Length: 332
Image (cartoon, rainbow, N blue to C red):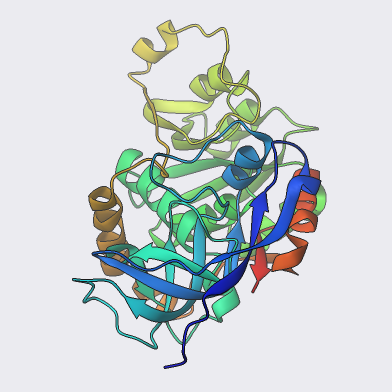
């Protein structure tokens, strides 16, 4: 095992603002504490929460690194006391509470997953955040079952493209909303049954038409705003709407009588502030129920683009165009 350096290059948020506030700097290499591992980062996923943190609207939870980056893949190079799930030299991918935009990153031993041979390390760096977000919200909170219909807003995003694959793997019909023909084509190629262009079509009417008037059993929504009441209209009786973001705003005027008449459940969650124990439980469920699909190569992240760590600002600019299809990743 190589000798660890004392210093490393990271990309930090110099002040709240646009992509240009992401600046490379030098910091000490962190040391893993009890139950932690140190990963020599090869790839770090870029996600919407990183953009929100950079703009000043999503501060890291207490005790987390101030650096952006919520998912990494790379080599285990140091073990904290009591870290026994992984050994030095293992190639792992992990959800982290922050700190991914760096050459080295601390991860919880219980949240790291061995990277299967079916995945490149770059693909692995694009997985943990989306995998855990979709698994928890669609299957644990939304209780999607085989034979049911899943409606995913933002179908061509990193989360959307993972939701398509997981929904189909578990026997659901998957409908997505997208903002263009190229995105619709990519989602259909990935396995979506229907792709609705929200710019030209009413997703409520289109969802009803695609389901014979029934509506969607589970709706995964990252838009919010006026989509909230429209989701109530698009949902089936006893449907579940799961909120994971509010790109269209967190406030809306809604007729809540629809909630009662259709017996709907409207829930939501954020992943980053959850306890390590809760995240470890999600990882355990994913290892048991989802990882076989990844090992077989049946599920892989759809990759949009990759950028060197030093060009994190360009990666954020790409994400903010909303033209990306799939995941954006930093190579370290």
